Image (cartoon, rainbow, N blue to C red; front, side, top):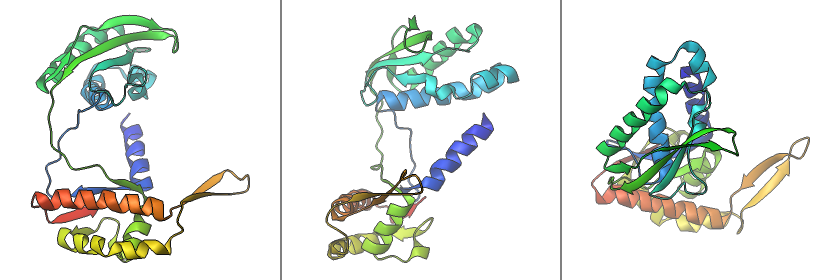
Length: 240
């Protein structure tokens, strides 16, 4: 499980860059059922490491896919979260649900009485976890994430940074605001519309080519993020 978490983390880090504010005390985001599902995984993972035998841990590998909002409710604030309990020892189900209910209540999230059913789609028992009320409040900066290649193009070709100044580097907020204000003139170096080019031996590799439409949207996201940091007195931003 530890090795799997490491591989997932490394994969995400290698494929994209996210904007961060230096010294900002990031807090847990629990606005949607999707967020709460991820949090339930975080609640259960450490206790599973203690309660499960090595054989049981191997059996439930990838269990984070078994805790998910019902239907298309990922971005809803309240509703049903499904906990597919295949391969989970029966002895842990009730204690884990009690633990989840307590931890959610500490975040001002009200969980109703779970209901155990059989899932006809996955052919496994499923616990329907009702989230009745979500009063968790947290202020956090906008989420801005780009693929590695797009981030480099935006910061190099639009914001006029050198390649060596991009990934993992610190950016001054006043300097970024100044570069954003003069960046629009560089958008015209891109084609008007973004495109996907197909290549590879079997014509199955898609290479996204950003155009002015994409770059304008990306620049606006960066501007909102940097202004958010500036309004709260933060002076440094980094990509990671």
